[in-house]
Image (tube, rainbow, N blue to C red; front, side):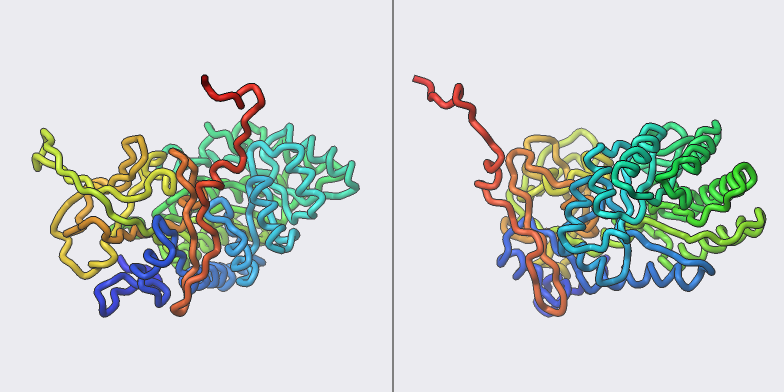
Length: 445
């Protein structure tokens, strides 16, 4: 499963962006996040173009920053003309520090603190997605204090339960996100928002879940959302101008994963939306989306150094299991533990070898910390480099210092050049926020 610019070079090594990953591991150390910049930029352009070519009204693509956000990533998003979806004060601060235009930022979150809302108002963000009645009223009051009329969307729950892991479903009625359509709450919120003098209600928003490998849930959500737009027009006399359908398109973590291409996804989404707009006699609203994983996941590869191998006897077939340990794990990729996430990998310095041995890749943390169970890798030896594919989303973004592991380096590779865009933390960095009060300063006698 070679992705983007990946290839096997004459030395039999995996190469990304014209860089031999074995050389990258030697130069920068491991674990190491490698981002294929050319592949990333191509994804951003293709996704944006796919919808611009197929939908008659304006389209806006907000990159979902939660998937992977550092200042270099912000610059790429800006250069490629996408907008930015942030979900915390920290993500907003990162975007502004990198010089991203605030009018192209949308702020999310089921609990935005007063400080986060004030920061967004003061920065002049283009949209705030209101998640609940308390926030709706608080935001209007804060906007009045700052003398601003804030553009907003109302996040609603369409009642769609997508077929994905239970922890990344967000569009069903039993969820912490948004305001329910079916019980009338969402329409009540729309009425309140229209009456508030310091809020400019532009439209409605939904997000149904993540890592969706077909378009069915989006089709179902669009039907509900367009019907709700029609209900709003009938009840209030107001035709809202924007429909945001969130993100959720899945990616290839395994060779057998076959998500729609951007073009196939755009075909289905736009055809479905146009069909229901015609059915309800609605003018096409601005179509907004918030893809994250779909744009960045496959562009990332994580490199590890292989350590000890251990064979153990087990009661089930085939009677034994071989554990291959690597120098990272759940501190740089917690998704296998959180979501039962699956990945594929290769021995990067033996990329062309037969994969005739099944092993389990284990991290080095003081937990079960299994990264990949039962994967065909072929021969491995201490010092080999393991390359795990499709780690561009929710790996660096969810990294931690568990077991006091320093967070890892990130490099962007392109045209044979590798640039550090996130420095590896040092052991001293782990102590930077520690404080010892005076009563603990004395050592034991």
